[in-house]
Length: 141
Image (cartoon, rainbow, N blue to C red):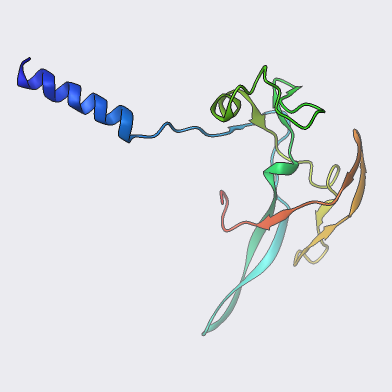
């Protein structure tokens, strides 16, 4: 076997085994994601500066679907038609944005220095109890 062909073969084998498969959850298109804003303070020894921040709802509280069909069943398991394994589910199903005020009862307060959380929110599809929020570090994280 010529050296150039052997080198190319070795590189392909190394690439397949050393570069992990990248799988990411797909973003939904049925419900836009609009994060409730709040003012936060960034403080150093020189003092504090106010900046606009936002909160995001935990992905565990969101609708995961394929074209409007639920990827999660009522039997507390993933639908095998869409999710034969984690990689297939991530490629097939999308995570929708959240209707923060309508479904989860989360709104920016009137001073924008916090958020209001309703423990029970009566929504279109039934009652929702609680919410799990995280303060975002930036627009994407």
